Image (tube, rainbow, N blue to C red; front, side):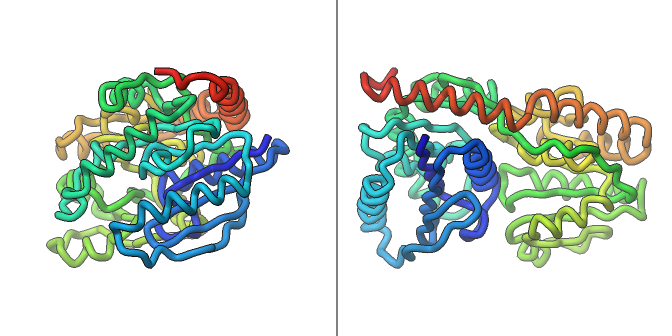
Length: 363
């Protein structure tokens, strides 16, 4: 089967986070199974085209904003005509599916909507209704709509006026053996945005550091250096900014606990990555995070720094509990988030989309 994966972000094409990671992993898994895969990246600062492990820039979007949507639509149409895929997959995020012609079998995979991402940027707030309109058009056009958790399916239904057809959790490679971090540090990985709850973590950190003065909080993600310039001096915090996969893997053994204090997540890919690294997890009790973590970690009330601090302090002070949760995380990774099951369920969804493309789009 020939598959075109259209995405607004991808590793190596500017800033890339959860959406880019799962698209890359999906491309690699489909390619290993013998399917033809082409990755089409339409990002803020340019366009890329290529295969699972190598995409190359084909154009830069040096075009005024009012003309960018028209240019993007034209470029996508021409690219799909050239590729002639059997099925097209695209995330709802970015609203790129609004430009995809209805005659292509279209699969849309739900991730966090723009409606759940509060921005302090005035221009982004002004453009919010238009962005949401493109998202809704993307979902309406889908022949098959996939949600990565029951939570995001339930939350998205009233927003888009349509229920998801399939629930397919994201997957992550399960290591042959999970290591055990030797350090006592704490790790946060994520974007610098309100939804990720980094402000809650920073309010909780002084209480944690008083109990464990030798522990360091490592902040990894975009623009954290800018955050450092705006904060009062807090002891025991190190700002890393963006790290490569290899650099992050080298940091993880120093961190006994990974914290995911998000206010909202559709799934919780960082939780699954922590399971694979053998780290104990503390996460916000919200939407897809609670569903992803299950009994394999501790959750805290969102917006309550004291609850977050108490959970982290408990884990840092109890090695037996950390070992128990790490074992449960490794088991949950193998049983619920396997690559083979993810690939098989995705191929079934593609087959359904190809059948439905011959008839009316389901409502």
